[in-house]
Amino acid sequence: HTRYWRDWSSDVCSSDLPHRVFGYDEARDFMFGSVDDPQDANRVPCIYTGRIAPGVDDRDSATRQNLNAEHVWPQSKGAVGPARTDLHHLFAVDMETNNRRSSYPMGHVEMVYWEAHEGDTLEMAQKSRLGKDAAGNTVFEPRTSVRGNVARALLYFYTVYGVGKQRASVDLANFRLELPILLRWHAEDPVDQAERDRDERVFAIQGNRNPYIDHPEWVDRKSTRLNSSHANISYAVFC
Image 1 (cartoon, helix red, strand yellow):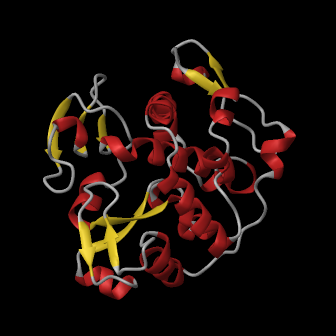
Image 2 (tube, helix red, strand yellow):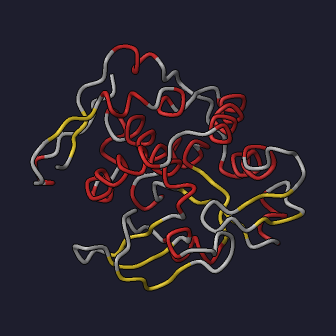
Image 3 (cartoon, one colour):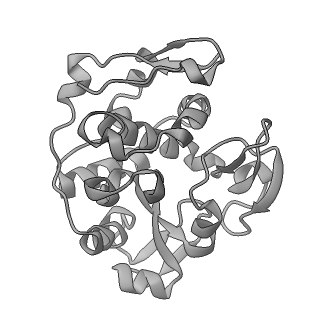
Protein backbone atom coordinates (compact mmCIF):
# COMPACT_ATOMS: atom_id res chain seq x y z
CA HIS A 1 0.00 0.00 0.00
CA THR A 2 1.11 3.51 -0.77
CA ARG A 3 1.09 5.80 2.25
CA TYR A 4 0.10 9.43 2.54
CA TRP A 5 0.90 12.23 4.94
CA ARG A 6 -1.79 13.56 7.19
CA ASP A 7 -2.17 17.09 8.56
CA TRP A 8 0.47 18.19 11.02
CA SER A 9 -0.20 18.38 14.74
CA SER A 10 0.85 21.49 16.64
CA ASP A 11 3.98 19.89 18.09
CA VAL A 12 5.47 19.27 14.65
CA CYS A 13 4.63 22.74 13.40
CA SER A 14 6.21 24.43 16.40
CA SER A 15 9.42 22.46 15.91
CA ASP A 16 10.36 24.43 12.78
CA LEU A 17 11.39 27.99 13.54
CA PRO A 18 12.57 30.33 10.78
CA HIS A 19 16.20 29.52 10.05
CA ARG A 20 19.14 31.68 9.10
CA VAL A 21 19.66 31.86 5.34
CA PHE A 22 23.13 32.18 3.83
CA GLY A 23 24.53 32.83 0.38
CA TYR A 24 25.39 29.74 -1.63
CA ASP A 25 29.16 30.19 -1.29
CA GLU A 26 28.90 30.66 2.47
CA ALA A 27 26.59 27.67 2.86
CA ARG A 28 29.00 25.41 0.97
CA ASP A 29 31.90 26.63 3.08
CA PHE A 30 29.93 25.69 6.20
CA MET A 31 29.11 22.29 4.72
CA PHE A 32 32.65 21.38 3.70
CA GLY A 33 34.38 23.05 6.63
CA SER A 34 32.13 21.99 9.48
CA VAL A 35 28.91 20.10 8.83
CA ASP A 36 30.46 17.23 6.85
CA ASP A 37 33.82 17.30 8.67
CA PRO A 38 32.81 16.35 12.23
CA GLN A 39 36.38 15.70 13.39
CA ASP A 40 37.62 19.03 12.01
CA ALA A 41 40.33 17.05 10.28
CA ASN A 42 39.87 18.47 6.76
CA ARG A 43 38.68 15.03 5.64
CA VAL A 44 35.23 15.07 4.03
CA PRO A 45 33.33 11.97 2.86
CA CYS A 46 31.09 11.71 -0.19
CA ILE A 47 27.60 10.80 0.97
CA TYR A 48 27.00 8.38 -1.91
CA THR A 49 30.35 6.62 -2.28
CA GLY A 50 32.01 7.00 1.12
CA ARG A 51 35.17 8.30 -0.57
CA ILE A 52 37.15 10.43 1.89
CA ALA A 53 38.57 13.58 0.32
CA PRO A 54 41.60 14.94 2.22
CA GLY A 55 42.62 18.56 2.56
CA VAL A 56 39.08 19.95 2.32
CA ASP A 57 37.99 22.91 4.44
CA ASP A 58 35.96 25.09 2.05
CA ARG A 59 34.37 25.08 -1.41
CA ASP A 60 37.61 25.82 -3.28
CA SER A 61 39.58 22.99 -1.68
CA ALA A 62 36.57 20.71 -2.20
CA THR A 63 36.58 21.48 -5.92
CA ARG A 64 40.26 20.55 -6.10
CA GLN A 65 39.35 17.19 -4.57
CA ASN A 66 36.46 16.63 -7.01
CA LEU A 67 33.72 17.29 -4.47
CA ASN A 68 30.72 19.52 -4.84
CA ALA A 69 27.34 20.00 -3.16
CA GLU A 70 24.54 17.48 -3.58
CA HIS A 71 21.03 18.89 -3.28
CA VAL A 72 19.10 15.81 -2.24
CA TRP A 73 16.01 17.67 -3.48
CA PRO A 74 17.38 18.82 -6.86
CA GLN A 75 17.65 22.49 -7.68
CA SER A 76 15.79 21.84 -10.93
CA LYS A 77 12.89 20.48 -8.87
CA GLY A 78 12.53 23.58 -6.75
CA ALA A 79 15.49 23.84 -4.39
CA VAL A 80 15.78 27.56 -5.04
CA GLY A 81 15.93 30.67 -2.89
CA PRO A 82 16.38 29.79 0.81
CA ALA A 83 15.93 26.10 -0.04
CA ARG A 84 19.04 26.14 -2.23
CA THR A 85 21.28 26.78 0.77
CA ASP A 86 19.43 24.79 3.45
CA LEU A 87 22.12 22.56 4.96
CA HIS A 88 19.62 19.92 6.04
CA HIS A 89 19.46 18.64 2.46
CA LEU A 90 22.96 19.59 1.22
CA PHE A 91 25.71 17.00 1.40
CA ALA A 92 29.28 16.71 0.15
CA VAL A 93 29.37 14.50 -2.92
CA ASP A 94 31.80 13.17 -5.48
CA MET A 95 31.42 15.14 -8.72
CA GLU A 96 31.00 12.13 -11.00
CA THR A 97 28.44 10.57 -8.69
CA ASN A 98 26.57 13.85 -8.44
CA ASN A 99 26.45 14.04 -12.22
CA ARG A 100 25.14 10.48 -12.37
CA ARG A 101 22.40 11.20 -9.85
CA SER A 102 21.43 14.33 -11.80
CA SER A 103 17.82 15.13 -10.85
CA TYR A 104 16.50 11.57 -10.96
CA PRO A 105 14.17 10.46 -8.18
CA MET A 106 15.31 8.08 -5.48
CA GLY A 107 14.21 4.48 -5.80
CA HIS A 108 15.11 0.80 -5.81
CA VAL A 109 17.22 -0.14 -8.83
CA GLU A 110 16.33 -3.41 -10.54
CA MET A 111 18.34 -2.92 -13.75
CA VAL A 112 21.73 -1.33 -13.06
CA TYR A 113 23.16 1.22 -15.51
CA TRP A 114 25.94 2.48 -13.25
CA GLU A 115 27.26 1.81 -9.76
CA ALA A 116 29.82 3.48 -7.55
CA HIS A 117 33.24 1.83 -7.36
CA GLU A 118 34.54 3.57 -4.26
CA GLY A 119 33.56 3.37 -0.63
CA ASP A 120 31.30 0.45 0.30
CA THR A 121 32.19 -2.20 -2.28
CA LEU A 122 31.70 -5.54 -0.51
CA GLU A 123 28.19 -6.14 -1.85
CA MET A 124 26.17 -4.62 -4.66
CA ALA A 125 23.45 -3.60 -2.19
CA GLN A 126 25.99 -1.40 -0.40
CA LYS A 127 26.82 0.60 -3.51
CA SER A 128 25.00 3.64 -4.81
CA ARG A 129 23.46 2.80 -8.16
CA LEU A 130 21.61 4.33 -11.10
CA GLY A 131 19.19 2.36 -13.21
CA LYS A 132 15.59 1.32 -13.79
CA ASP A 133 13.13 0.42 -11.07
CA ALA A 134 10.47 -2.28 -11.43
CA ALA A 135 8.13 0.18 -13.17
CA GLY A 136 10.75 1.25 -15.71
CA ASN A 137 11.53 4.63 -14.15
CA THR A 138 15.14 5.81 -14.06
CA VAL A 139 16.01 6.14 -10.36
CA PHE A 140 19.01 6.63 -8.10
CA GLU A 141 19.57 4.31 -5.14
CA PRO A 142 21.97 5.51 -2.41
CA ARG A 143 24.24 3.07 -0.62
CA THR A 144 22.64 1.16 2.21
CA SER A 145 24.18 3.11 5.09
CA VAL A 146 22.74 6.50 4.07
CA ARG A 147 19.31 5.62 2.69
CA GLY A 148 17.55 6.65 5.87
CA ASN A 149 19.53 9.91 5.97
CA VAL A 150 18.46 10.70 2.42
CA ALA A 151 14.84 9.82 3.18
CA ARG A 152 14.69 12.08 6.22
CA ALA A 153 16.33 14.95 4.31
CA LEU A 154 13.68 14.68 1.59
CA LEU A 155 10.83 14.44 4.10
CA TYR A 156 12.23 17.54 5.81
CA PHE A 157 12.42 19.42 2.52
CA TYR A 158 8.84 18.61 1.62
CA THR A 159 7.61 19.59 5.07
CA VAL A 160 9.36 22.97 4.98
CA TYR A 161 9.20 23.89 1.30
CA GLY A 162 6.67 21.60 -0.40
CA VAL A 163 3.64 23.48 0.88
CA GLY A 164 2.81 27.06 1.78
CA LYS A 165 4.38 30.12 0.22
CA GLN A 166 7.09 28.29 -1.75
CA ARG A 167 4.83 25.51 -2.99
CA ALA A 168 4.45 27.10 -6.44
CA SER A 169 8.18 26.77 -7.14
CA VAL A 170 8.53 23.17 -5.93
CA ASP A 171 8.06 20.31 -8.39
CA LEU A 172 6.58 17.32 -6.53
CA ALA A 173 6.89 14.79 -9.37
CA ASN A 174 9.91 13.05 -7.83
CA PHE A 175 8.43 13.12 -4.34
CA ARG A 176 5.22 11.45 -5.46
CA LEU A 177 7.27 8.63 -6.96
CA GLU A 178 9.71 8.41 -4.04
CA LEU A 179 7.45 8.60 -1.03
CA PRO A 180 6.71 4.88 -0.50
CA ILE A 181 10.37 3.90 -0.64
CA LEU A 182 11.46 6.88 1.46
CA LEU A 183 9.19 5.65 4.24
CA ARG A 184 10.67 2.19 3.87
CA TRP A 185 14.23 3.48 3.98
CA HIS A 186 13.40 5.55 7.04
CA ALA A 187 12.39 2.34 8.82
CA GLU A 188 15.22 0.17 7.50
CA ASP A 189 18.02 2.68 8.19
CA PRO A 190 17.08 4.34 11.48
CA VAL A 191 18.64 7.50 12.87
CA ASP A 192 22.10 6.93 14.34
CA GLN A 193 24.39 9.09 16.43
CA ALA A 194 26.33 10.38 13.43
CA GLU A 195 23.11 11.70 11.88
CA ARG A 196 22.06 13.29 15.18
CA ASP A 197 25.46 14.95 15.46
CA ARG A 198 25.20 16.34 11.93
CA ASP A 199 21.75 17.72 12.71
CA GLU A 200 23.24 19.42 15.77
CA ARG A 201 25.98 21.02 13.69
CA VAL A 202 23.43 22.32 11.19
CA PHE A 203 21.34 23.68 14.06
CA ALA A 204 24.37 25.53 15.43
CA ILE A 205 24.83 27.23 12.05
CA GLN A 206 21.36 27.93 10.68
CA GLY A 207 19.21 27.66 13.80
CA ASN A 208 16.69 24.93 12.95
CA ARG A 209 16.51 21.15 13.14
CA ASN A 210 15.19 18.26 11.08
CA PRO A 211 12.27 17.06 13.23
CA TYR A 212 12.45 13.54 11.75
CA ILE A 213 15.93 13.10 13.22
CA ASP A 214 14.91 14.30 16.68
CA HIS A 215 11.58 12.44 16.50
CA PRO A 216 11.72 9.63 13.91
CA GLU A 217 8.45 8.26 15.28
CA TRP A 218 6.67 11.28 13.78
CA VAL A 219 7.13 9.75 10.33
CA ASP A 220 5.07 6.71 11.27
CA ARG A 221 2.58 8.78 13.24
CA LYS A 222 1.81 10.91 10.19
CA SER A 223 1.50 7.97 7.79
CA THR A 224 -1.45 5.72 7.02
CA ARG A 225 -2.49 3.31 4.33
CA LEU A 226 -4.08 4.36 1.08
CA ASN A 227 -4.70 2.63 -2.23
CA SER A 228 -1.79 2.30 -4.65
CA SER A 229 -2.93 5.07 -6.98
CA HIS A 230 -0.28 7.77 -6.82
CA ALA A 231 -2.79 10.20 -8.25
CA ASN A 232 -4.81 9.99 -5.04
CA ILE A 233 -1.95 10.54 -2.61
CA SER A 234 -2.43 13.35 -0.14
CA TYR A 235 0.64 14.98 1.34
CA ALA A 236 1.41 16.59 4.67
CA VAL A 237 0.27 20.13 5.30
CA PHE A 238 2.86 22.03 7.28
CA CYS A 239 1.13 24.27 9.85
